[in-house]
Image (cartoon, rainbow, N blue to C red; front, top):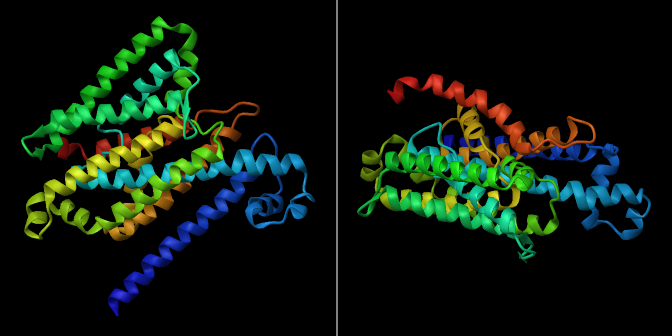
Length: 347
């Protein structure tokens, strides 16, 4: 009976977050340089279920803005935010560190380096809806992860301390190279800076389709290993005694989560702190059971990203702020708070 009550509570928590996310998405559709009534936003958003003659009764400009600009943008921000958040959950469990997020393995710097090369030497090439910059960012992120992983591997085992240090070194090295390339190519500085700050501007339905599969795979995979993550949090020795193949779980989490993070970076640019803030806050509210923490983090990350993106495109009239700046404004102070809170553990 107690198990059923606990399961019901988990379902209620998840449904409440989904409801909050839905309401926030509808509100986000109404915001922007062109204000759209809530009723119109809600009905036009159901365009796939409506007959064309019903849509014809609404302003053509509103139908276009909702259907082709704001709706794909909001859905993509949900997918990217949710994915980054659950990757943060898995990394924090593996590293046993509340300050770990999707970029500790040099993913951000690798993606930024790849995107910089794509911007400087890009040609009009696209594949599956991704331009050369996105493809180079994806490749750069994976190559960076591979290098960090190789450096941190000792025999058949992975040292979490080594992987954090290797990620830090990789971030520093590639950031320096990017700065040098920017100085040597002043005409492209603004493009590079804009990409590295993260943005959902210009999102298309093709990008949404690309992100649906990684998001589903990521959520199902991390939910599937939630019991192992619970054991890892207790310590590797305890996890091993509970029958968990610690090395395999660590390797699979690092490889698959890095691949998923690279997918997110490829379509949105670098957006930091989502995987840091959301899992930690929700862990304080819902506890450390990953069976609940993973799904609520996914929807919580989606909610946070939609709010930040709405602020980014609505705060300043006739101008859009990169969403990465907004997440950093929230995340920077929060990171300092975590650093202060955990300083004794770092000594």
